[in-house]
Image 1 (cartoon, one colour):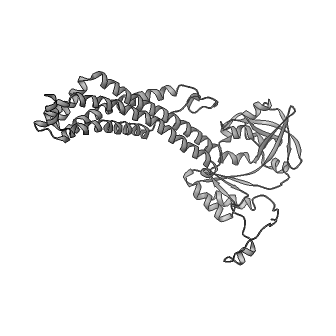
Image 2 (tube, one colour):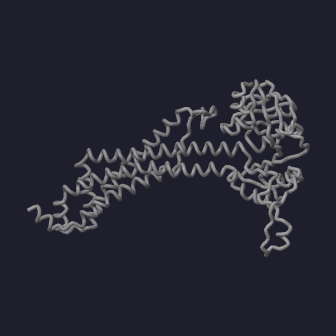
Length: 416
């Protein structure tokens, strides 16, 4: 192996400029791959954390996944029965025995629960109407299942207990209404009730759907405005281990029959977008590494063409085809390794530079000081190195294989 290594080193030193260009191409590809994928990974991790922490891990609602089977179908399960135009009864909406269900769930290890009543509400201010989803909560228990109390920018969630006429709104909604802490808002519900509520808190989660379209009031106040006394239509569950969300949801739904949605199901579409986004990002940045391989292919192909007579002479004095292939593959690996090392440094520096930029539209930011975050995963660095080295080996092997198959006698005769 000493001779192929020596020849490979001589070829690289003899073409320093081309070698340097190839190394820089690999380094640029690796650096861009690390910085871009790290940026997207940091954004996705921040957004996913906001979704998970700002919302319950499991939500039980007063719905059922499938309608109850008709008695005639149950009576004749094997028959060809068709039931049409059935007018279902209008049941009283709400979770029956919600207190018992919450007590049973709270008894499970690592589970916290909170009741709520969700309904539509119309906010009126300065001649404008704003349709929102109003959620009646128990502030103390809600603070155990979401990070709403930590997302408060002004006022506090606990103020809902002190003021029966209090309401907590999102910062985006408050800005749109031109309202501030302490202002009053006229509200109306679908049941025809109207009242005046005072803003006792303003929150910001960074999620537009919540900051603009959701408000919070005390549970008993919401039950009164919605004309549904002592009714709860949602139970929020928070887990110390979010990996148990599907398990707990399946247990709750199987035991009580109400629909229990884990966070993976609630935000399934967003997670699917993340998967598609990763495919695009990895594909585009990986293509840069493949393009860098063309530079290696070019330099080794040139060496093979120029050194054809030398290769023929070495073959004629006993050098094997395998040694010829190893010689040029070693050149590709050497360029790839140097490019990977430089690319790691370039990727790390690029990531550090990106983290100095402020995160747009998020006062809380993606990281410390409200700046962008970049995910520094060993997997990303390893994947970038693997793709770069693989493309380097393939780019070197193709011309090396051609050189090894050349008939040395034909080359020597042609040269003479």
